[in-house]
Image (cartoon, rainbow, N blue to C red; front, top):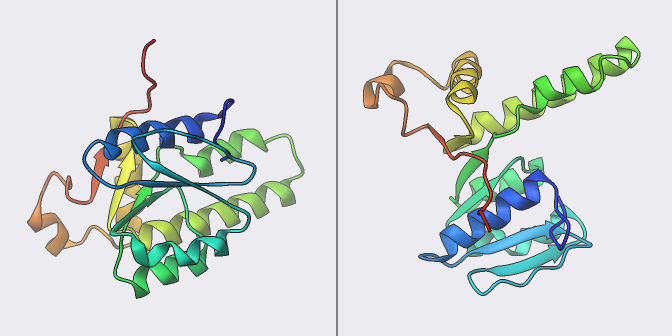
Length: 174
């Protein structure tokens, strides 16, 4: 999402995360053009195409994103960078509701695309963020269906906190 004076949910969430993490870490917040933001607690980078981010990836230790295109996921894996999938937005379910009045072939195409994208992101994520307990339960079910919650993973931590955790959505009070 674009970042600037007016922002939607994803922009607000990522600015807040960048500020919080920027207190103790070097943070680069990347957003698509036309984005512009100045904040002393983090660096900012506006990109035209996702491929523009390829040069930034080797500089990172951790990347937090809602979803990364396959070319960026490949670069993340190649460079041994931790990928934290931020799944605070249940996009598959959201699109069911958003498209329910559209023709069924349109609904099916969107559902198939978003389900495959969700599976790709969750299959390679080192950690998953959600915004609530209910979302955590839902994502544990999805992770389980993808074969991510196996006896070795469960034995490591029965709470599964090493795999999935809650980062509530919120904004600062003024």
